Image 1 (cartoon, rainbow, N blue to C red):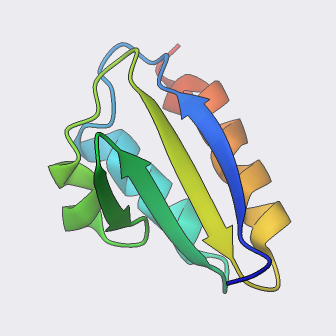
Image 2: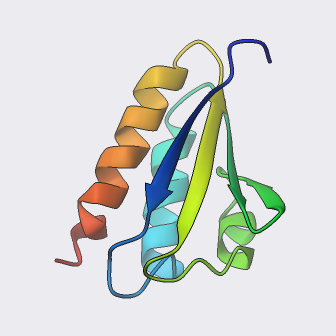
Length: 91
């Protein structure tokens, strides 16, 4: 865990991290070998768990931290950041 990388993201899509965006987030995180976590409001969940991501209840405007630990952590975080910045295709 010494090479842990983290980024700060803000949800800008209108609906936050509800079912479809949460599913996209989990699917994207799952493409990578790294361990990926979401941290917000004192809670931490596995970003590859749809139930975990949904229980975070992140709404539009919410800031959160994503950490990745593994051989492809930089690529993983770049892909997740791009997904969030694209507003999950919600315009």
